[in-house]
Length: 227
Ligand SMILES: Nc1ncnc2c1ncn2[C@@H]1O[C@H](COP(=O)(O)OP(=O)(O)O)[C@@H](O)[C@H]1O
Ligand SMILES: [Mg+2]
Image (cartoon, rainbow, N blue to C red; front, side):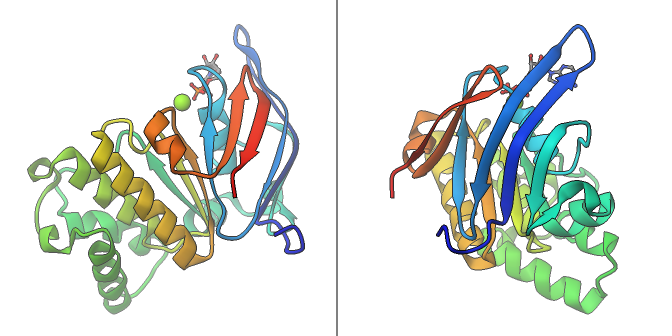
């Protein structure tokens, strides 16, 4: 959709860690438009997590430009950007053990000061959406890996973020469960009118995502758009 504004527009993004690591991203650039789900693919050490952290607003030490809805990321207030724009899903879903499923998903809404009544509505909705409403009163240690990952996704998406950043979200899961998680990310991206960046090296997962960016040694090697 080249005639709409990109949600994310990255140009000349470079990143250098302090020695001994040195430079790990070199002039990376791409754009994501509404409803885009892209796979970010590449070998271990390619710089995928570094790039994901920068887009998620967790690392502001970079050079180049990242525009979100046309405005430089560095001009957003960091906590507002992280709380309201981005939902991050990691391979290791850090659910909080003494809180129930419902309470874990409720946290991001509490942080941004949503009323109890509204929280109840939103948390119930997203838990139904990920198929975990029937487990809402369980504790994390009573869940399977796939169920816990669904809860982590619900927690990342309950505030309806525009940008979903998922760093190897299926890394711990068997292939069918992983596929369901990807399907869910796709549906929610569509529904929220957002964008999603899914980092993966699972070939089965990659096959289901039509837009792909291949990264190697910190450089974009190729991009594919199978639409
Ligand atoms: N916090 C850090 N400090 C220094 N070097 C890092 C840090 N995080 C990652 N690296 C290095 O940056 C490179 C890219 O890492 P990373 O972005 O994690 O790659 P990927 O997620 O593709 O496996 C690697 O060489 C890694 O060792
Ligand atoms: Mg990584």
